Length: 368
Image 1 (cartoon, one colour):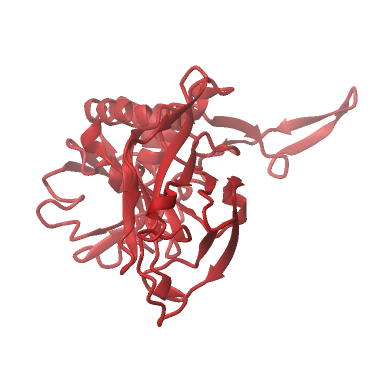
Image 2 (cartoon, one colour):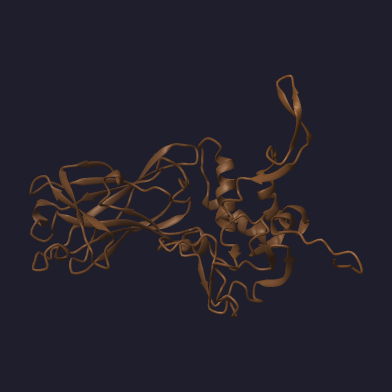
């Protein structure tokens, strides 16, 4: 038996603190919106059946939330978490910015989708499990969103305690002890959009499911094990020696933001090291997209482009601002069409056959 000299102050767990304390209401209101109070039938005591319904003499109610699974169950007491939680002033600013990247236009429940994915994008790098991601905090931490299989979205942060680090005094003002960890209060936001949600979007050209239309050409997928190439590439061959082919691809998962639109074109030596056909391919491109009002539009990029035939070349086609997000949606809102643009008189200077690795949309925040 332990005899206490006075009352023991109650410690909230992280979830309780978020959904109870006003200083965390920016983040907490999101979690609260998905909260449900449900009967735990196994823990409750039945006292009979009335009019076909079970009656309980002792009902046990439990709080459930579909978000627990997405954020590593920050309501439970058997783990120890660290959560970075911004002041409401900071939260309002970054949430408004995130919403601009998750504009779903005229789709059904667009506002709900925007709210869900904007919140999720901001919060998933705020939660850290001390057991798995914080064992060596002097060196690095990784959030609960970390996956070793995801090359573009690492969710790993180095030197988090040093100046400029996400847990440093540059961003964290103080901490609050919780029964299942601690809340670190952010008075400045430590992330840029491209750190946590505004990622590059890559469409692998060799996947036939990504092709939506083609004309005046044949195509074949080839595998490759080169370090500078993804799993494989697409060979686009003209139907005749003088055909200017077109190939259309869908670009899923883009956000409503500005991207540098690129094509990664390979040299012919990737297939045959002794090939000495070093003529570049010359092509132009157009992008089809949907406006916020649901109207389909097409934009033709002004310049023709060509690749460097001596190397793996990321060719910038142009810069474009996409108005409608398709993240988390079954259908892509954006399609990119490549069109070979070689005249008969240019046939000796250029090559109509293209080895296409992927289409690459690189975030460009300078345009915003």
